[in-house]
Amino acid sequence: MPYDRYEKKEKAAAYRTRISPEVIDAIYENTLHKMIVEKKYRDCKYNAQQLARDIQTNTRYISAAISLRFHMSFSELINGYRVRDAMSMLTDRRCRHMSIAQIAEACGFSSRQALHAAFYKAQHQTPRAYQQEFFQKIEAGKRKEPKGQSAT
Image 1 (spheres, one colour):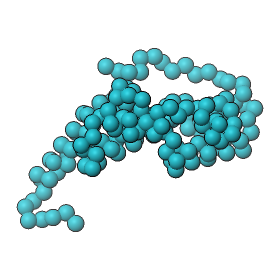
Image 2 (tube, helix red, strand yellow):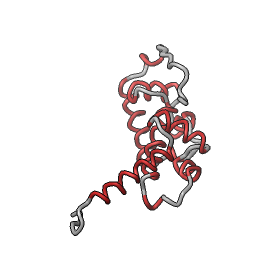
Image 3 (spheres, helix red, strand yellow):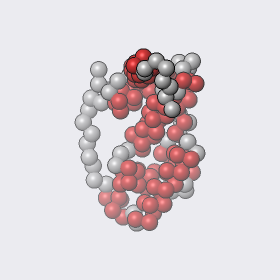
């Protein structure tokens, strides 16, 4: 069952053309810092308004910068980081004991259902199916390895 049922409508916003490239670049760099270094996406309540406050600008500029530099919306951007984080945790043996709901919470999703929707949209499969497929490939690889030889 696909989650993205509605086509995305492109709208040209006049304010996007009024922002200087230097301001867009600064917002882009600050956004990357907040997402990659500070991992703000792990806070399920983090939104464009909070990002705007953190980097001392407004939400229209945030929207424009993300649209121009990342070619997506703020929610698509933040969910992308969350999904990649979830993919990493789903394939990490140290996180094998965690439930999907616990992984969703650790990655910044507000619920297990929110993780499922974003994950399915990005990967075209559920988080559990992704995890099972990954570990099945690992096990299949171990069975094919000739006896007496170890991977170096």
